[in-house]
Length: 166
Image (cartoon, rainbow, N blue to C red):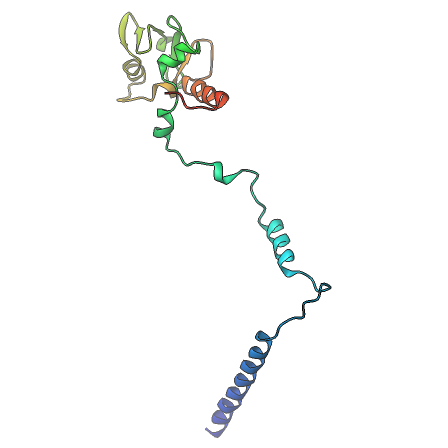
């Protein structure tokens, strides 16, 4: 029992010495010598190497929901006005499980198409062809002879003109 008590006393003495040593070091001030390395610069360099900054100005990035973004894209009437599509163009659904020829419809105006001799809205046509209950028609429709969807055309227009269309 005496040995363990002696060991505890010795351990406490060692700890007290370590604490005094640490306090002396932490209270030390380095001389202001220009020959000493600037550790702040060294830290900055290490961060630049280990954690490179992105080449994008992060302050210009805006988090926008798809729904909000779609609201700022040109609608069909603007696509017609900008000559990106015109009445009389034949549209098809780009979905791979849909037969392209069977999905062809003629654009009548900004709201309607003629599909198999029946006049219907663009969304009704898309739903009828796909069998879906709803459809984001711009994402799935394209002009015959083109592979770019109406959605891709809208995005390209806004990007090219750098503006939202209302």
